[in-house]
Image (cartoon, rainbow, N blue to C red; front, side, top):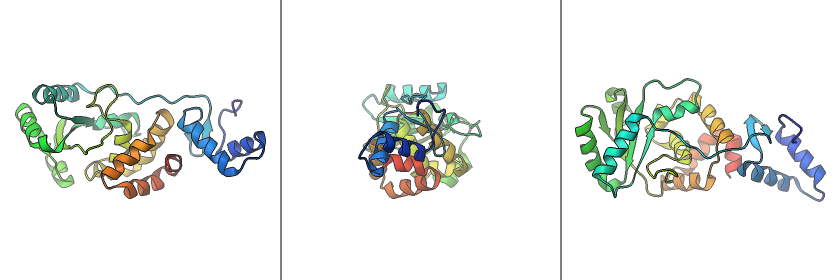
Length: 235
């Protein structure tokens, strides 16, 4: 396989079973999944893999607006858990670039109102508290802020705890009541395929978070529709 620019799943399974004696197809499929999860083999397209590129940990440099909001929350509530996601994070994954940014500040449940009041004083007229999709589209402004609830057991950021992990993003765009309405369904294939091709993804963290939100089956359905091979490797 190293001599090929890319190869299909069937080509890999046939080569593996030819190379390793007394092996079943199920064992060959398992070997492929393990190689993909370890970054030894990488998906480069629908039913196409390569051994050339290695996956990396997801990192993102937040906008000045997002960093400023994070600093204010940390200053006023240093012991409160929160995470931040912003729409333009998806520009690394989508075909149609997002021009108008919105910062989502997710806060542990007992402190949502306090954080909302603080941000509302700093950014009057630009902050919404747990809006419905209809309220979001009616009242949100460019560089607006949405304050929402941070579910317990949310995967914590690696460089800073308030950073959004790729696993949480991939779940929320599928099952979150607001984000699943904001992110165009036509971009889901691009988002999942690009994320899976480029970054190391903790499948256990994804399913654990989805279960905590009571949305495991919904996530499974979305992945089955838009990223079936991704779903197969996560199972």
